[in-house]
Length: 339
Ligand code: X2X
Image (tube, rainbow, N blue to C red; front, top):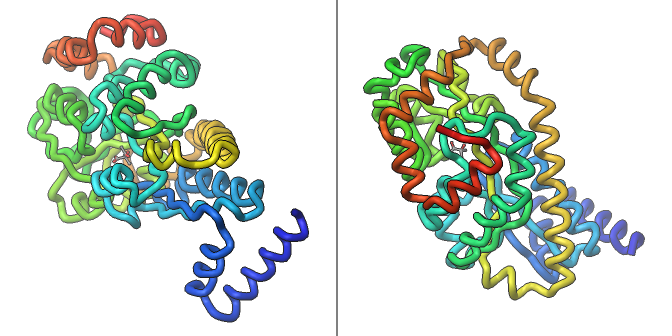
């Protein structure tokens, strides 16, 4: 098997060098028994892309080239809304999506993104990998999609602005902020009295550059790798919610794959998700320094005041009602009392 793999690698290298990428692609598709596509919305340098690539490489290696997963990062196949449609129709086999955006299809999925719910990763990861995550994945399966066991990391979300720093909840009043397409995001920023506008991540940079939106909110790693610091001045550490990426597959396609293929694919995707979390945790301090060096003014805020604003606006009452008492109790079993 090793010799075969090596010979194949050599063959590909030669084909690539002599005839260019078009031939390379044809050769690979021909060699693979299962040519599958995976897509995401993060830049090539983001750890989500880096570790999905590692998983695809490990899968190709272990199956001797039989399973070839080609990655389309950085919204190459369209924005999240488009990619979700492609996944559902079967045009795309694997796709990572925020639980909150997935909630446009599976309302129960956004429960992991409740504002200020998680005080630490020591609570979050065991919950997502345990009964709480299993509850969400069961709802996802009912919608005809399959969610892999290990959710990938996006991070705690922070607020950026090109016009004025958001230091107190009142600063949000009328603030034109881009939010991802999801009822919970719109609800949260309405509760802050901001003026949220729904835009897919694929269009965020240009929306900020043209000042259609004054600000946006995302974890530091994404602000860094998507170069949002080029079009934003201030960053407030509002830490208002945690967000991850469920790796999803089309349920029918997934169930149709041979068991040995599913086992290898799931093993490597889940293992690389856990490795990606660790990498993200390691880089948080240096990313903040990097963003300061690139000219962002970064400020701490009193996050309790922002949470109190959500509370008084009825945000928690609304969402507890939507998710139901049982799901809410399961959440608070891990987080402790939220509000
Ligand atoms: O759209 C966003 O802001 C992003 C990239 O964080 C998500 O996928 C939710």
